[in-house]
Length: 255
Length: 279
Image 1 (tube, rainbow over the protein chains, first blue to last red):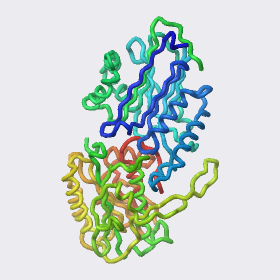
Image 2: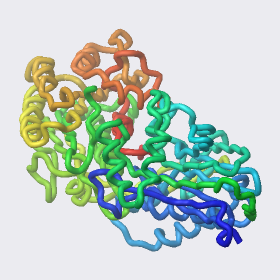
Image 3: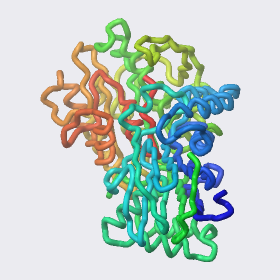
Image 4: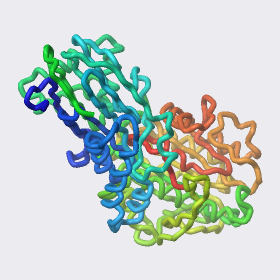
């Protein structure tokens, strides 16, 4: 088991949009070091019952049988669970209408196997691969100008028109010991790419954060500082860090 | 950059709707000849309010991103809100949401995803009834909107600039509305000038025109006058409209002819958008 020889370590950080309460956070993340699967999702703020949908998406991506980064058949289960939860509720007219429309979220999932990684993206949550302290691969977006406020989304009602096939993106690559992978929702990813384009070394900035004795405790303040001074857009922020230990070749993941 | 203030519950913005309820509204509507313009106007304002509410609706209730006023002008100029909201000027959007006059059951046709069409029932709340009486004091309505907004801007000086949406068939009877329109557009928050958009419902059976940049293609002088009174779309609204596949030219204005302005609500940024509105 991986847990006995931890060649992979992962951490998650999150904070809510300034001006909202913590329970209004609508991103989600999930990870399982044993299966080597991780995901983040960003619930669309204009939809309702969104946090539950984002959470169902990441959890089901991580636990689904089969290649959840490849086929999307596993979506039937979270869609059913979401509907079971919300369809029984008695609601005012506006909440009823929003429920009918469904909830929407982006999804970024990655699955690691012995030497490779496979990623799935719908929308603008991003994966970055860092090697030797440098920003390598970025997926699915590569430039800060690629972000808008109408990303591709996965809908809880599963209407075919919601997610056209060209908005489902896949990528793959090899990982090496010592690699670090970052999964982020859009505000932080946009900041990362923009700072990188400006030659501002965001990777080092993030390394310093992760080297703190208790990075979780300072994460919200770290984000707020960058909202104030570096144009990090005010939004929910989620970061998942996956580190492959250097000089340890024993990682074996299922899936 | 102006028109970039975040819209949130501590820094909301404001919508004032001006609804022409004068007797000329008894005439049929060019877009749908079996309908009186007054019914077209009532549908338009109710749909605007509904979409504004849905934009703010979350599973736990309505977030007050907007304050809303509805001014009717037909004979006299008064708040067009009724029922529990009768006579009120500006109210938070949650109060509008929870106090329609009634909620109608309507049906719409939707794509069933397999090449067919389904009839789907949906709830259509009514806040403003169809009404057509008296002359058209548009200038006075613009003046009252200005009073509402002076009050609002006194309280929320840093807000995203308020939007005034005027729905009319274009014939003011109390003077040249351009002067009052300009006075309204001179009001500012620290983020920019108040925006005035116009929706012209005409008896003419001319094609709908949305967000034009030039007045030449407009079919009559009333449309041209309303076009001249309309604010240019600020850059972010312009970009959002383009992203929504509206074929806009530079300097596009917040003006539509025989069409509705529901899309404006979709263009406003309060977070990640979902490409849906209620038609």
